[in-house]
Length: 194
Length: 417
Figure (cartoon, rainbow over the protein chains, first blue to last red):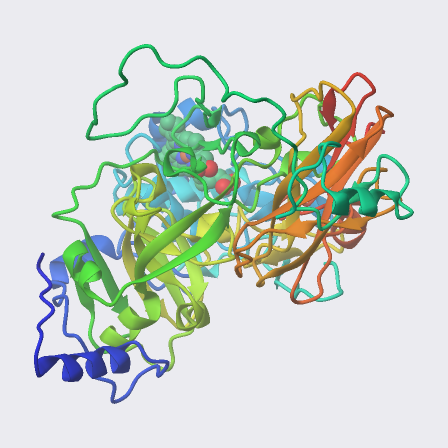
């Protein structure tokens, strides 16, 4: 056992400290335990892979649709199909139905949601591909190839033109078709069924 | 406890039945009903040889071998808990449901760490030993995948031969032990401007979700033990996030990093997935809380009732918003409802076992259960949910479930319509 519970006069003081540190206050004067250590900048840099819609977290680099076509053919087609629609895994391409956002209406639309018709933010592609794809070797694409494959997927979805070049500045600016469709959860228990 | 009587059922149960309830209807508050023993000798022959010696690990009885149902044998897949085989409220850790997005990682507890950074005054990396050194808490609560039961969110095409495990097996209950996230947040000094945090796993997919900081001050925990032992690898060994009452996916397993932020990160699991398209052309996002729900676990397919008579209808009810305050059971497809007995403990955000005695006459019957929680919410019908959301939604399918009992005793999923 690493933790020793001392008897004698130390006990009362120790009990008080624990009570203070686990109390309901959020910050301020409560004493700390002081466990843990400061992470090194290297550790943080290696771990901090997330990307926000405002572009925070996007690395240097850039990629073209043309390069993205090659990256996709090399690293993605086996699981997402030659045009991003054939599977066997998630369908990445598809704009239909072009009008409206009817996914809640009919069960038939289950399984038809794609980057093109359902994803609200283009930055999510960078965040997700860097953390999880290609599934067999996540994180293996460099920044340039990640931008490139995103450019290609967005081009297949008719969201960016053939000559698009994506980087940390242009990616957050892309307006995704489903951008304004998302609303906060309004369920709150009680009598209402939502 | 009332002593058993010759009728095989206690006086109180009979009074309940004869006091105006037609045959085939559920009798409530009859936990003291008892089937009489009848036989004079203990069951089975006397053992003729000595039993096994003590061992370092126990084992299940050879003929009691409940199994998870693996429903997609892939790195992004999972398995469901055999709810029909379990009693009480706790799920044995090795039968807890799984859902993974990059397989089950093998993490060395000695090199494991959890880093908290972002909008904090003191970015800190905690080892597992550090986490265990903080004052610990244990709590019993459920975890449910928000996609649990989505296959039954439709009126057509649901197979009658559906078990409670395949319909609703992405639901389990454990006692979890760990450190309140609020303790860690005070330790690192969270900025007052922080409104969300990213929780990220150490699995191959680095699964990540944005969580409102409020949940940390409320009841979120970093847990390292499950039902008294270290968390199983499939459940996030050596440590995971626990968000009592909130959809399973957000309870990030193998948690390696928490980043405090002033906005959500809009990860794939909170945009492309785990959002609920509605019929008004919007999609509900960050729908974390699991609404009240109940399932009958006995009798259920493929069980066959061997004969009419007294049967205990039993199941589980839960709500992500607090305590279950009642469960009603129907044996006539929802035409009439009767209160079931809630078995203690009735804990907030936890499975509650309900039981109701039913005198089956041998006629066709449709068994249903309907839970309500402390907010006054009543588990809705499928029609009511579809009316509110649309037929294309699929997560949070907490509608009332039905089991049809046929005259030959076979039990099938659905109301038979």
